[in-house]
Length: 454
Image 1 (cartoon, one colour):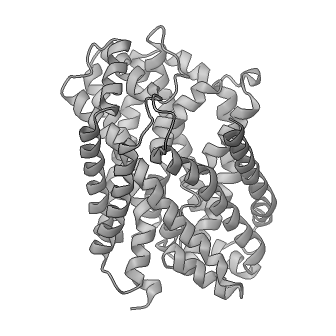
Image 2 (tube, helix red, strand yellow):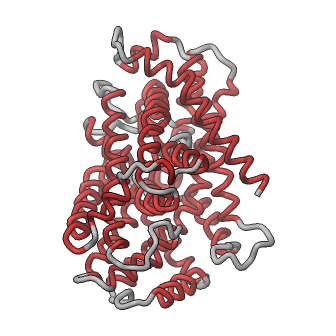
């Protein structure tokens, strides 16, 4: 079978939009975005984040999808195809390889955190989060992080769920996630938003998210906004390139990716509008309380509100589903490549890669420093997070922008973008050539400098 036709395509444009949004919407939107907004002053941070989505996230996402749709294969073979087409050295194929490897490395620690959410779904559903004090919630979370066996069970369960979807293929597996889980995610998020409006302090939350007081925003906050705008869209890890390979021929790249970007950003903002009313309704809780906002502060907040157990269960189910929709896109690029080699069918290829990521997750569980009580030694979780988010993904996005902006023939780019004589095409090309690479480089350099001097 022709490698360029062996995986199938999405049934329609909206299936791709929902699948790509599912890849982008994950723990970054629902877990990370609210607390980094809290840490960096609220509205001004949100405004800078939106500008960065427009100048970095969406333009680079278009470039990555363009390569995938042109190659119609896994990120590795799509990069090989467009590299040969451009008459360039095969070293550019490393973009595809780096994305596949980064996806597996991310899956290793991502599935561990997603396992935390699965555990809290169970705790909330069985009433174990009701009427908790702040100290008791902290002890519950700390005890869970110290329970190796329980961590391994939920890490393994989440890995198995991810394997099941990817092994089922593009139409029955990934398409199912897009058509069923994403509408479910949006529905639950809206229910939680209504709950926040009715039972929480919505006016305080809205003012916090949209007050635009720039005196509260530091330069480090600007860099955090820029970095999160890049990473929240799953750029540089091969996922969007792989999904682009399954994109229907007639779908317009620019309109489709703008829709994905708007949906992803809307989820992050609605998550903030759903979470912060609950936080502000409980005196003494801080919106900038870091990662513990989800697993310590929110259980206490829900527990003190009407029907809190039900809505706490819904909230953690939302987090788990968002993580699941993202995780399948971390395994898919490597699985597609293994299938293209002709040596493995999809199910065993997916099992092999899931097993590799699972082993990495076991290493994360056995060598963690989540409680901050073991500063010495090798911490696999922290190391994988740093290598992928600070080095591999920015490099991938940077090289994708350079490749599409400077090295692909303009006629091919215009054709794939369906942008002949479109007035906005030259603006997009300028951003991809100059603005996006510069901003990505700034984030990389600043993050590495901060890591080295701290």
